[in-house]
Length: 101
Length: 297
Image (cartoon, rainbow over all chains, first blue to last red; front, side, top):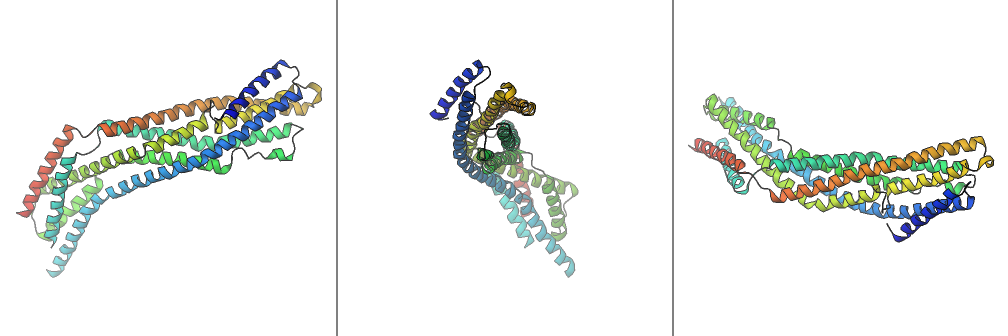
């Protein structure tokens, strides 16, 4: 969090103390509090947007991890395939042999 | 020709077995447990992210609508209620937590027990065809023991490949997971950060400020206006306490993820295969060599 945001937070806290001491609360103090909250939100919004790009980078990186993991899982089925290929080849020979007989 | 195919196949198996023996095999039980803990942590974060990012955005819009509605001094330009948290920013965050969840789920899949059914089916088929096509007259007992070895070897091969992959992947993506965890901490912390939960909290406090003002100005406001202000005050108070609750819950989940990630990488780098694994492996290899000799003779 940047220094400006910290400073706004401190000011909001102090204004809050003043408002609580007033009965009824003044429009002026309330307006100042609301303006500071609005400013605070605008600054937070900037930080959120900045982090959105970082999130995008994280998605790219994790997508690579997902792809790599999926590839390994897919490749592991090849053990079955290796045995099956041999089995199929023998089956064809068996059929040919049966025809010949 | 078919005989040559079989010989080649078993030669490959024999060679692979020797290579595997030299390089170790599957993951240790500790490594499997840590991978599954990591997977569970990513699922937790994934669920939290999917529900809370969108939820926070909707609640902020509701509070901003209420804020403009109850304060007479607000004008139409204040109705830019969607501005602080855009749908795009939310979608990106939801996508990131979903990606993390998928990554965890795939790692769990990779470390889960390999299903031997496929291997058994294909080994059965192979043995039947060998008998029919090549005129070998294996006894039922011989057939069963050969099948057992084929299935056993296949399983070991799969375990070895899985272990290599998991070790490589979790080490390579350790930093990516940590970076995402840090971003999530910024979004879900109330102290010292500027993210989603902070925005939610600030929006609630602003609504509370105006509600308190209206409620305490006596006859300046009508009974209906005061009623709306009371409702807004309740809404804001609920949001403030909810922010604390979500923040605490998220913090625990994210810290759990970081811990699981660090332990996982540490254990993957440290632990290698066990002595028991090697012994079983040596036995499997010897059986394969014996079978190979039966075929060549």
